[in-house]
Image (cartoon, rainbow, N blue to C red):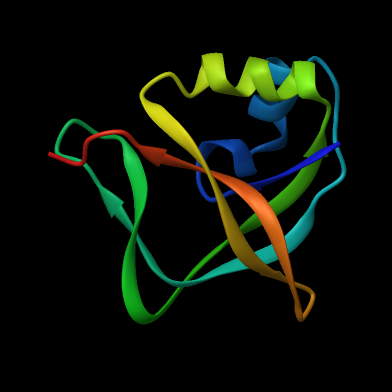
Length: 101
């Protein structure tokens, strides 16, 4: 199983169900020392900025579901990062825009 941190569209349960074909339980989580930034073409991404926090949700997916997410997030690259989940620092995949500008 793979943990994913969602900070925008994938926080929405309807979109997760559309992409994955099932509902997945989530946990509140935070990506520390980052901000969410909107690309001029309307795509959100996270970029490092000391002292800031991006709030989102984590959820677990299978390898095949991770491939579905990769297809859905085609403009993004999947990065392994550390997020704060219920006070615990855990590894999770985060989708970041391939090119901010």
